[in-house]
Amino acid sequence: MFDEINSNNFKYEAEIGKGSYATVKLAIERQSQIRYALKIYPRFVLLDPHKLRNVKREIAILRKMEHPFIIKMPFAFEDKSNVPSFNAQKK
Image (cartoon, rainbow, N blue to C red; front, side, top):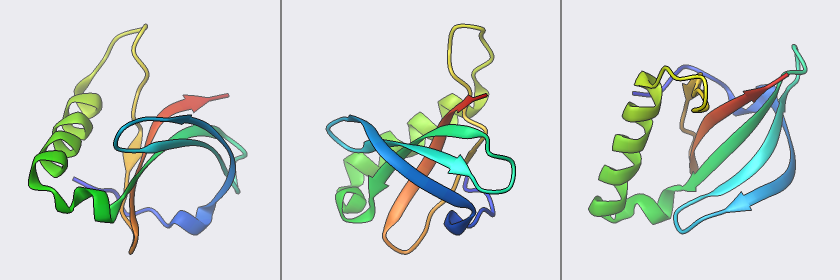
């Protein structure tokens, strides 16, 4: 379900949104300078099996989406304290 990505490859900028499960931040890939909206799920929130199931479902659905008006999710990864997913690519 998760990609082999290192969170150190990104520079995290301002918070651009907040929901009931996660926070969305602007992230810039250091090498390419491509900007992404990074949705971060704190791992302690996902100890609830219901919330974890919802997050896994959201990631699976977004990976399959192909529509011009729906943002793409190029990758998702996890680290020791968070489960971030990159939900939108901005050029």
